[in-house]
Length: 297
Image 1 (cartoon, rainbow, N blue to C red):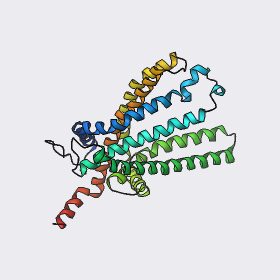
Image 2: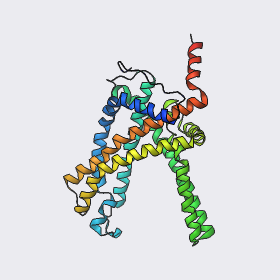
Image 3: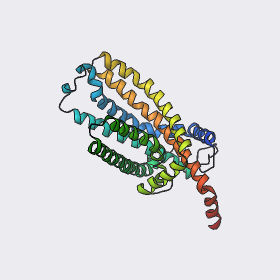
Image 4: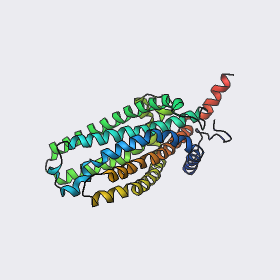
């Protein structure tokens, strides 16, 4: 355990303010070990992302005058490459942050904890995160495709129906966000399978929709502020350079990508403490643990 520092309880029934405070205390106490291990993977991934970002089509509109037909033939590969890197990057950030939290909860985390101690847990969480994202992503795609197909079959050319469909999709995304964002944590901290983790998160998110949404909103605002500050130089330079690329645009794009490594761990920690608190409130995890320890004496 971290030397000369009190251990923060995970499973404790806290109100919203106390959850945010406990998450903040955890970050203050463990930010060095979190970012030491995050940056080892984030720096090369940021450089790769920065390179891919330069060729992402949206940054070439100025050069092409908005003419999509002017995009190179490998535009699809540029888009695919960027999103593959982005998925790997974000998955790693959640998995490594979750691994640090898991080691801390087990009492094994020290200031010297590095990849040797964390890689096993991190890669396990990485795989679970990818699988959960795949299940949720495919479910949303299938639903949206069916909804679009229904609208065009039943009311092709009906503008009002198309607007209603778009509105339903937007409401669905907003409504399901608290469920989706909690989906990782039963897999991380309770050893559940991907499908079981999603099922548990759906129930927890439904019963605690309001507080979970507030935590997501606060985390998203923080992420947006950091993202805007770090990405603005790249956006400005890209406009003035009319879509051309050089070492400066690569460097600025890499810095913009690196902002993700700073902000995502915040969201993961805040949502983890949201999960811990509502699990304790509903199931008394800490009390059950004490009972089990007593029975094992």
